[in-house]
Image (cartoon, rainbow, N blue to C red; front, side, top):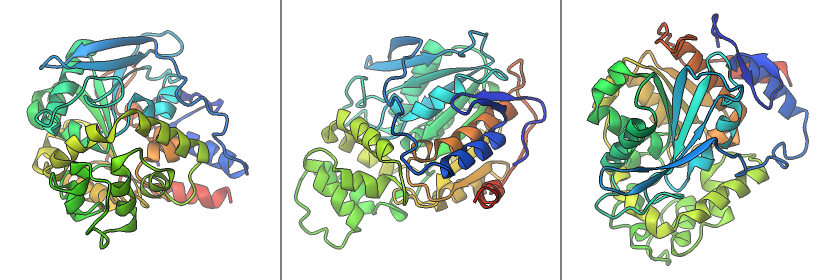
Length: 377
């Protein structure tokens, strides 16, 4: 990966001034030297925001919002807004919020919020549990806490779909203010065609009904059977481990993800199943052409396979496509040093120190990570 030639960033927790690519090299070397869980002592869920507020959605539903200022107290150059995936919350950006706060060039103000029906936000109904409504909610958050200045949007899974729906709703916002977009483990359509079977995503599926028995679905993938079995209660550790991660996740990260999943009842989550099934926004991707776009996915993702990321990149030939080797559906938690380093490169490429739109750079399937792994073996 070619690092930014203008800007340098300090990555918290790494202890060195480095571009995102250099940060990847340092942390890969560090993790390979460790034989214990590298995140056993990580203070998951304990990072305090600088401000907490409640934003009213257009229909009055309260949306929980957290803001994190640059750690050095300087004036931010850009606002980064994180849009989490289904069943998760603001906490799913733990590593990114920790490390991006330490950036100085550019300084980043971070905004994270809980979708309706998730975390500490208000409930969703079957009528409002749609990607269109989630896009309206994101727009409400932007108007309330980031009414001006450049924006970088970062969306994981359904969060990425929400960003696409917002581009469909308000293309002018992307032409005028959104200078960077990071789409992580997401899809622009055909969700039922690859990954989870379409029958699981249908509003008529046992998951949507909340039925605990697995009945006539024995022909489905074993991972999906585990997920459906869990629909009558809390998600099991075995199901989460198999569905969300690659081959060798940190046990502490698995436990952290389970804690997040336990907060949002399955009865809330299943309301969103139908809108994911009907998601088809390949045509909308053209509206992202004004922003610097990166598409990040794990090549061991069982829920939304990496082929979805490749399809998005095919529609956006100037986008940066990043394959995270061995990662499952939550690469920002499973391989945070990789994802965060590319996010640093995105904000550096998208913004100069004055927060202006930078020069477009198109990068595809970077070979750097493979080289780094060979160097540090």
